[in-house]
Amino acid sequence: MSLSSLTGWNLAVDREDRYTKRHSDLVTAAVRFARTLGLPAARLAAMAIAGPLHFVEKITGPDAIRRKPGRLMANQRAVIERHVEFGVLMV
Image (cartoon, rainbow, N blue to C red; front, side, top):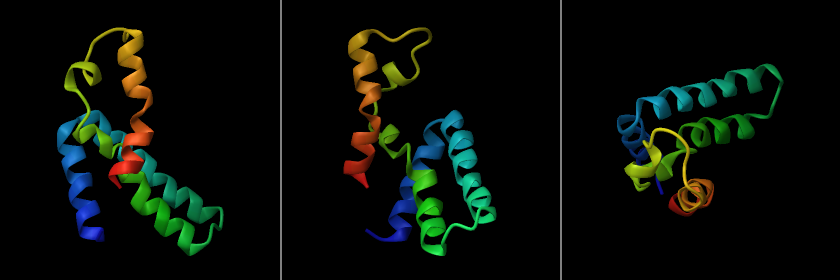
């Protein structure tokens, strides 16, 4: 998969949800912090890609669960808790 494909997915996620956009921006800002810690360039590059993409599964996630006000039912929470697994499979 090319970097431009990953960037396209990131843009789709950002359009999906303003909270996710702000959250992804904050995660991406961690790269600047990691740079001050002296992390290797390869690690910084991986963080710069992974940060914005860590919620990529929201593209396919059910809106009814993601946008539900209040507490989630157990079966809904189980879906949300698998988001990391779905994201890994997508990327």
